[in-house]
Image (tube, rainbow over all chains, first blue to last red; front, side, top):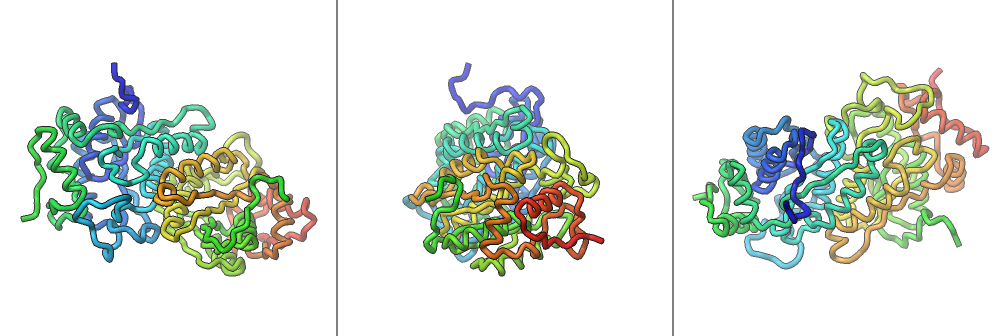
Length: 235
Length: 235
């Protein structure tokens, strides 16, 4: 019996919409949802990302993770001005910074979950899965447990499903795990982390810089988990 | 002193993001926000609508309503399958129906407000304005007061603004007004309702069918308000 309130309950063949970025965390969340018995509909977003390799990775991860479907939704990039992840004029930081990093994309998880909610209603799914976690939080307000619970509460007032009966659940199974916990759990489930891209500034072949916040968290996670790091780094 | 908890507080030159559909309600909400002293940034959405005339109307209304800016965000239509408003294979109903109408678009206001939240953060605005109301509710779960309050609560946990201080407010100044109340208020504020399009199935010149739910609500509203209906109807 688990004592983690965020662990995924059994899916029993129910449909779930799983946000899939191409990174390590969401790949693990997908593997957990598949293992728990959900029919997983993976959802990725194409915005003015620095790295299209992320989306290529997401497609490979969806297939490897036995997702029932994988849909890529294009987002209008104008809504995302002013972040280092989408605006080439803002430098990606290579040292740890105080407060909210410039890699923060305004309202990103709110928008992603809003689309997931729409897809869930179309598909008849009442479960959403998002791979946010406290370590990866790193100053992003929309990765916190209280945000996830507030989104779930709002979603249950927003949709036909909520009005007509089946409550909607937002699962964030990684939210209280360390990066090492995540990597250990995913390794047990057979996740091929060699497919995943975490770097904020990979090269065209998907190789990581090894210097950005995300690369540092990832490398430290593999080291702490005692798992060989399959990341391909730039020369 | 007002006793309506939904009436707009004074804007005092603050920036607000105002959702603008091209319809009667959001045109009135914009006029109210401008009159209350907000600098209004109008936001419209281009999805697989049956009527592009809605967006042309929104542009005219934004200009007439003295919006500081007007942005149109393109939405990926795939997320909106299965509704009469976006799917030409589903017939628009011409008689009143029980429950949630098929013109309901899954998670629409959640997605619209999520984008508005992102724009608000980029603009440094802490006020969102949405023209939903109880009469126009007509079975749409995401037009209810409890939805608006839940979105506001979630938004205050989702963004940099929330974390760093200024609380975000979601205003729905029409939510407890009847259609006649809205039309009377807008008329007092000088709204040109001849610019607005409410019909679910207008022709290419923007003329209304006079038969759909939205046309019926609108016509009844002008009659009840004792205001001459400027709507152009199809011959």
